[in-house]
Image (cartoon, rainbow, N blue to C red; front, side, top):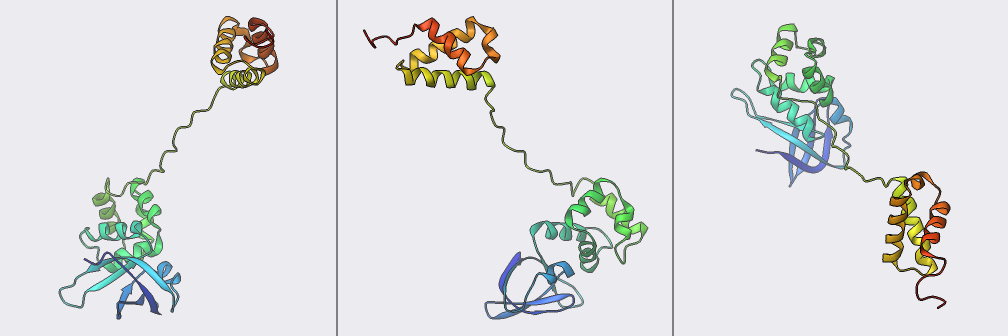
Length: 209
């Protein structure tokens, strides 16, 4: 199976492009949207689907991304839907719209596609129900936002350290003050610092003695 190709675009037609790969010019059938992004003389990379045919030459279909190819290959699994019709769906709707139409059982969305009538649209919805689900955005990693109390405590500890107290003594003193005087939870840093200094004494142990 040819799942992707990369090479120089030699020609862009109305419904296909020719891409040179290792010296061979491969004809790739694609949607108007995909073809519009190709420029002769420039390199491209396309996701592809190889479709053999009993009575004619096989066809190679190209897609801008794997999402388009997934929609295409899934549609091919439906009775009465061939590669040309599957490609027509992607010419009218982007993958997200196809998924949304299936989730909403939106027959009208598929009858907008040339060649698809109401019965075929209903068959598509019936056979694809639960197969092409809506892509869910990746959840953002949880971040820990420090509370104001934690920020105040950290600033007071830093101030005490700069005044000469050890980090251990500073942390212990701040924790004790905030525990014994809960009303300081919303107080300004200067207020908490003043209460902590009052508890510790104005001079660190070992300094000025």
